[in-house]
Image (cartoon, rainbow, N blue to C red; front, side, top):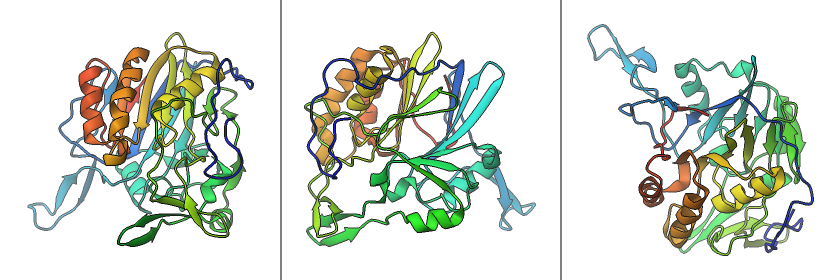
Amino acid sequence: MCFADEPGGAPRPAPGVAVDPIALEPVDEVRITTLVENTFDALLVGSERVARAGLGAGRVEAPQFLGGAADVGLVAEHGFSALVTVRRGATETALLFDAGLSPDALSLNAARLGVDLGAVQGIVLSHGHPDHAGGLLGLPRLPMVLHPGAWTRRRFALPGGARELASLSRRALEAEGFSLVERRVPSLLVDGAVLITGEVDRTTDFELGMPAAHEAWTGDGWEPDPWVVDDQALVVHVRDRGLVVLTGCGHAGAVNIVRHAQRLTGVAELHALVGGLHLGGAHVEPVIAPTVAALRALAPAVVVGGHCTGWKAQHALAAALPDAYLPPSAGSTYRL
């Protein structure tokens, strides 16, 4: 891996083949259902690649209407959570990737979609920011894979004053019964069929990381934290198709993440990229064009830029990859 142990370590180039190659077992299918997303669009139409949830995902009491009830959709918020179901032959295994921002959004949306969270066999945390960990409490007590940097205290030091982000509590999660598996390096789950990348090699010259206002507590003071070293992705190799890469925020950079997955697995083809790509906001607008160009060259069959991707990057991706791009929406199931 390219990072030193301390947060904020500068990236180092990682040319050539991986020194720690991963033999990732191919799967027959992976389904990614977004349980928490920034948007919910009840009018999106499904296709052979994606099933959409519309109004009627749930029904609630509503005395202002005749009959006293109404069909409703799903909760949308600035957060991300996805159910990942991997199929090998007739065997299916489900993992939860991130848990949204609010304590109840994940559980509410899962219930309205008919998703049984009790069938989940493990949890993966992409990184420690609160918009990915807010709905953890109340979930089944399962093994949880996370980077040790996920415990880092962080804040935004803004001109009007600093605002500290909610930080994960190891004690609270252990008290809830979660079995914490902390790894900086790659992990293989589901009998070698799911790869968690661990720290991602930062090799591009255009993916900038977080702005200077994003800071981490070192124990002695606050220091700039541009790299968010705990950022990691989930990777699956779909047989005869290529890699499916799922990101939470993609703080490591979408292109860095994809290249890292390719180097680790030795699989060159990118079949799908799904999740937050962190291309929203003025700080990262210069990153949009080179990111889109690099992804276009990779020619994935499916691209879903959700959560923190931002509308400018979403429009650019849709224009550059019109046959591959699918708009994000809570309750969507991408079938790969």
